[in-house]
Length: 211
Image (cartoon, rainbow, N blue to C red; front, side, top):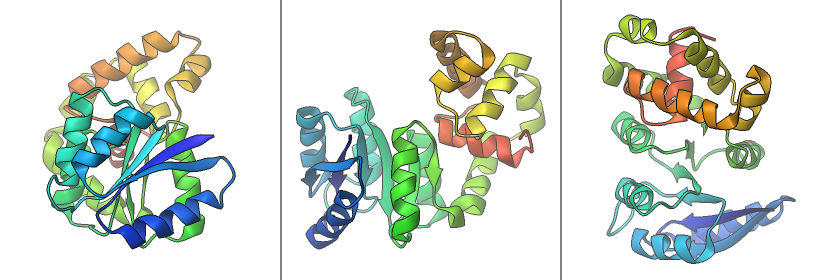
């Protein structure tokens, strides 16, 4: 069972999303919060597998909430679920280390599979954001050719698999190495590429035609 915490300052929307999620086998909403501070407290108390987080909220913004959660070692998958398709918001989410970015106008048949994919360690984002996210990455990574040249063959192999949505466990099996070794390679390649998350790495790989 994948447990989910909803953080959004619109009670009716929270309730609607919760009801939608509860219709899907394997997904369970264990908590709801109306602001970032309450969300952080509930994340510690409930230890959910995933957090769906709004971008624009009263008090702490979604970005501020995400940054604080990472500081406090909350290890849930954190997915932005928002109306904003603004490039600055998308870029800020990527740089803050979000595990995905979904728009609230997503169709239910798209949203629920995306939630399950995110819980399995895949990077998820609404398809209509692909161009915006690629532009945001391009502005933040600079000389892509030079950055690509700094990657080792093994790091390139792992980057290709990240772009295909593979988890560390699956990458380890496919490359016949340990999961801890994969984690080290992922950390190193993110540092070399000046990226902060697997989502960014996956999008960068697609943008550079590595996959």
